[in-house]
Image (tube, rainbow, N blue to C red):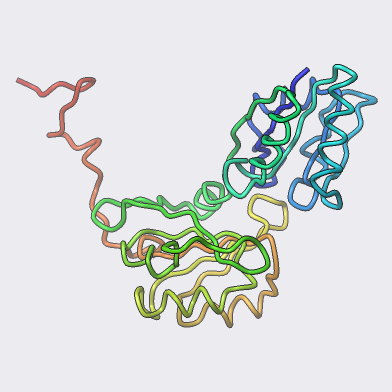
Length: 254
């Protein structure tokens, strides 16, 4: 018996990995975070296998179900949204399982920022413009942000910021980034990325709050900020495919 923490991807049922899909198909019990993981993602489970939406459950209740499955010798698919290493709340579950001697493994998934970049047809790392992406969030009712992880600190690097779990904190995001990036810095907010009803609002730090308010986004949204998001970003070509660039697989011509 084992527990598999599975990254289900950003929402679209066909964005779960093949390994994750097979784990769901072979599980004896499926626990999924239904607030962010559509039921369609776990619909491939075997007939008769229960799928429990854990959105209304606390940690003790979730672990109790896993303990019960362990006693029966069942394999458990614990399905989280996106990639479970990012804001997946799996660390505390794994600590509990360690204490109980219950084995587990982790299957990665497609993170929301990657799905959003694909939907926007953007490369987030442009030669000569930006070569770093910072994945972060702001503090609301969830855990406090550690000292030194302020948005303005990250912004001073010039990186593209992928700000998670912060759509209801957009005023703070804008307030902290404006002095560094400027009012004309591009921003794109993605709502329910990869779901059938996904929507995007593009603007700049100076006007994005008004645009998002008009769109009515209040949850399940991701904020991307950075100069590289502009269609007019003055990026050069990568050296990777340059005719005069040689490497082990493309030796220099003599």
